[in-house]
Image 1 (cartoon, rainbow, N blue to C red):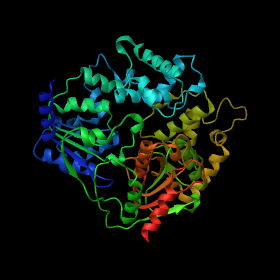
Image 2 (image 1 turned 30 degrees about the vertical axis):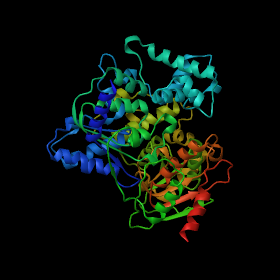
Image 3 (image 1 turned 60 degrees about the vertical axis):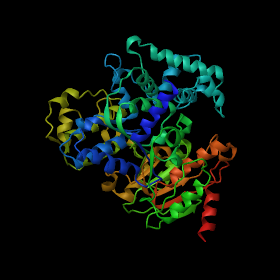
Length: 541
């Protein structure tokens, strides 16, 4: 392509692209769904000619549900092009070449694959998410060689030799399937660029555009050539995936388009807005934007002890956020000691739900009440897992009707309520009790005293996780724990790394609707939230 053709292509992109810039809480996703998507549906555009792309299934499902509620004539199948970016690329692969169920490798499996495939690599070279494979993925997303990406890393957990060996082992494993070779998330994008001919569309909508990597922008450029209208939404101040190759400059500067700026947040009031702006001062080279807080006030407060934070029994939602997974684990322990009912962002509750359901079922049976088929199956399944029992009741349950209720005597007669392999003939309750650790018992007692059984059967109002995991979400109250772990030490970072770190904490601060609670730490590695808070107090006066 010569220079004249390239300029012509860029002009075409500019005239058909609208870039929506919005600080936190200004309604970027709302604008994309309510004003853009529904506008075209009201104009009788076929949903099959509209693609809505994001990076999370939650965002995609939200868009589909809102569209279906406003236009009930459409069903799920009509919005077949509402996908995550990777899934959208995957749908155009030929079925005989790629079967997601058999060939997909996600990030959680990568480390296990390498560890099992190459016995030369010691256990010391591995973490939960392998560092070398993470850097290799980053090199692919940055469109540079693995060696170049390795050299640019400020902190090196593996030697160059081990790093390259892991990559070689991983790629050999993927190719071992022959014609049905294995594939990972980066492969989806790379293959789409090389192999896929994307269909012509009327509208392409992309949310969280600041999180796209150069590799992902390459596939977006390819899609854009066959699209009549493009809408991109994002906030470069919340570009917190630099570690994975994301580059917000592609959204702000490199991809041409007319700019629309949202200027008023609906999420938080003056206090949180002012504190967030103190952190944002250190974010240089970002898109110029000014925005106003909502009419509410809210507040920001600092604490030195977790127990000082005023948790209540209201319907308010809470985020308790740490910078890295180690601090999140510490926060989970603090929350358990305080008797809080919580879950993480992956819906894992603070106790064993199977155990809880089994205990409730047993309690009903022991009080001469009946339980339904599902509760009975769960109870037997839990017993089999805990006790390594020889029970095989699958055939029994397949013959039983779904509507039947079960009593203690009936289950004892037909399935064996007592454990046959137990010499003392102890009942199920003994099995349940035996599997309880002292800490779990204390946690349950605290939870029952504070919340009661009815509330424990509902979804927790408190979520504990990393700042990255809740990006795009919001809560009434947010707790930020400033403790960090090496190499996340703020003081040792260079200028660019400090800017990226500020973006992370800026994102965490702006999740709050009503109140922001800063939990400080005396640990030697900390983000200076305490210093930011002092500046906030001085400027407040």
